[in-house]
Image (cartoon, rainbow, N blue to C red):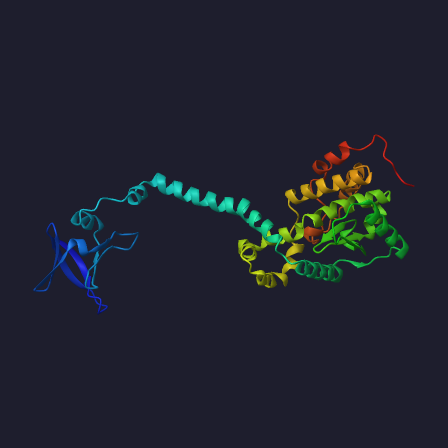
Length: 337
């Protein structure tokens, strides 16, 4: 005999009942009444977690059996393989570790993979608007108008366009006074390059400026700003883009400039931009050491101001990154006086 609670399917209240069985029938005694059903007509749902064993009756009624072990013996049900595994703490621990590892792998590899593939779906107009919004934020909070003569600015633009192999629709070269940011150059989304007056003053010749611009152009070619934003925005935006929901970008656009300021290029993106710069410099006949020389000086002059956004700081790990450029240098640097 087995105790259970009976729900008749018409009322919310449960009634205590007693169950007995034969080889073919389930019998239920409720008060002075006895009902029976063929065992083959029952749907028996084993206990799961805190949910007791449930038996669905052909007439729409339901039995709940709190004693899981007695219910299993009563209906001659063996433990499922899932229940057997759950009974072992080693398996439970392994399940937790596997789940954590899967989540970590999704974050480390899955999210960048989705974001990089979603980046090709970002409309060019959106990227240009993001670049314009970011430039406005920089001009409002960090930069002031350049004091370089217009003729000097145009001369650098001409050299940039003539000597470096530029991607299509790239690039607009602008100049600003850096102030607290100091000597720096930035690649904005949409193809705009910013060069500070301080960088121009720091350079010993124009080829050093071109070397820095070759690196920043590598960021534009790789669409690193957009990829970085998509990775930081989470998997939801990337999946929305991959599934065709381009409108989702609107919710990111309003906060994208502020978010971009707080991010910094990953080692992967820096290495991609470095590789592109090295190819460009070799193709242009510019000694690769121009990049390592000026980058070392930029790092030495790095501002001590801690409030500068991460995106505007001088590139990290200079010594490691400039080895490839230094190795290709001529013994005697070619300096234009």
